[in-house]
Length: 366
Ligand code: GDD
Ligand code: MN
Image 1 (cartoon, helix red, strand yellow):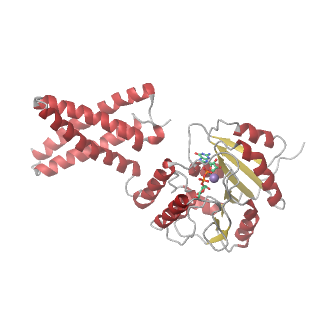
Image 2 (spheres, rainbow, N blue to C red):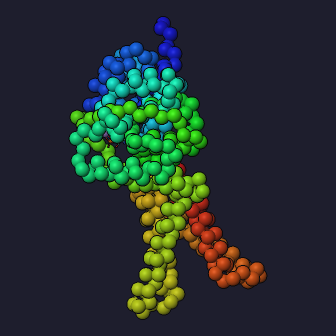
């Protein structure tokens, strides 16, 4: 029997979502450029429905370089890259798209640059001399330029193309960042650089972003929203979890909504207790729906789960309200606090309770 191969030098991690027709040509291109290297490729597939895994299995049947990580119920380029990198022991790790828009001919130069020690991270860059974006429309180019400018808020180092999804780094650099990663959305390079305790030595090598031949881009509004959340998490995430900020924002909207409904009911002639009751119920349902869409988007409840979630959320909020009233009354009465301080502490307490309880009960993981 053949001895199984030892740890390769380079692992190329390729997140894929419905890229069936790109798999085989991409692997042959990797062979062409990495001939002189010991390497492996890990495709991280988020449960594609177009036969992508079958295409990977077909290639892997006769090619020991090819591996697959199949994730179910998950999304996102960033977490896909992270988990692919963690599934390998290779001392050098590269991130590359699975649609052949990244120029694989850069890989050997990236590896050589890391090996000489002149850099710890090498980025395939569209925005240094000699690079480019091929056939992009004005909107896409403008968005990319804006996103690049915004990224400077969280980076301590100059990077011409922090949005690039094409890069290679030393494993110890990845390991130094991995516990601080936000792992949200698409922009894993930015996440890694912003998560390192000290800026790494970076080299940017130019390449031209090619146009896609097979399959479709997954770029949509969700990608932009995830980017905003990533920046927010990098800016304030070490102080408060970004999910909590969203939850509190939804709560603030809920108060406005509550007052609007209350006013409407009173205008319609309802008694105050009834009007307040209706407003409270509307606010709870409204907050539940918004939290389900935004705050816990990655654990979104549907069908019966949605109804069950609404019930547990309403119960949790009721307990929160009771605790709020109890604490505020204690502060105002026996503890002689100012009315506004008592009110504020009570409200803050119920906010924290509602958040903590609903994230483990209503929107529990998996
Ligand atoms: N596993 C997994 N899960 N893969 C995904 C997902 C996902 O949720 N979403 C997209 N992919 C895969 C695609 O199949 C493709 O291989 C790669 O990630 C890039 O997706 P595209 O949809 O082709 O991205 P793009 O061309 O718009 O964006 C590229 O350009 C950006 C720079 O503007 C990507 O290279 C980004 O990495 C890059 O930052
Ligand atoms: Mn693409």
